[in-house]
Amino acid sequence: MSRVLLEHVDLVFNVNREKRIKDIIIPGSNRFSDFNKGKTVHALNDICLDIKEGERLAVVGHNGAGKSTLLRLISNIYHPTSGRMTVDGRISGLFEFSTGFEMEQSGWDNIYLRGLMLGETPEGILGKMGEIAEFCELGSFLNMPVKYYSSGMLIRLAFSVSTAIHPDILLLDEALAAGDAAFIQKAQDRMKQLMEESRILVLVTHSMDTAISLCNRCIWLDKGRVVKDGDPKKVTESYIGYISK
Image 1 (tube, rainbow, N blue to C red):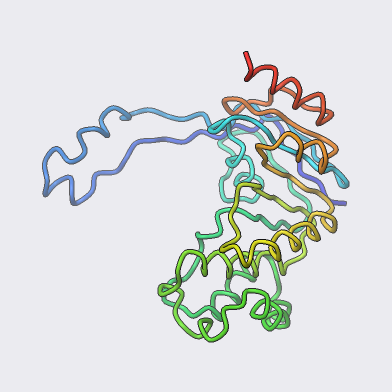
Image 2 (cartoon, rainbow, N blue to C red; image 1 turned 90 degrees about the vertical axis):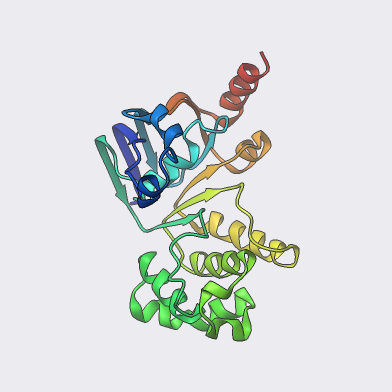
């Protein structure tokens, strides 16, 4: 059984910046950083969340509320400062596609490495190389180091690998861009398929209609706290009423 359990989870960032060589060579180059000296950001605050198999959870809230941070926490990019998190099931996170590339390596190498990072076995990802190459439509560019790729090509490659791994738990940021216009429809069809097949879906969205139509549960985040948790229609109505004041 797949499950995501967060028990009184806090995530705190220390915003202190280490001194760089540039700060020594160019005196005063870090003068604006002094405003943040000793400060912390409480990104997630006392989050208690139990997401069970079969749930499609929408996450709504204004920019900076902690929505994307929650996805990164569940995917183990961030680790709780305090509290406890338990995740049962294989995760695929469809967000921040531009990170995690080995820029000096070829597209083929990055398909393999990214597949391993997503929890696929060496045999499993090798068996999917052809399918991934066909889906991303990068052709001979896969033989080149990815440092020569455009941003759209990087997104195509990362998206193609990420969606070739069929997860138990799918973390999706609706705001992601899946490359150029010719690729978008195919990417959307692939995402819909993954959403139907996954055992748990956590969807960050700014569309209240999407939250209601695709999900059976919704949380409203504000300043890193869960303000409301429940039926998507009721939660989104409360959120819209709040931001309309």
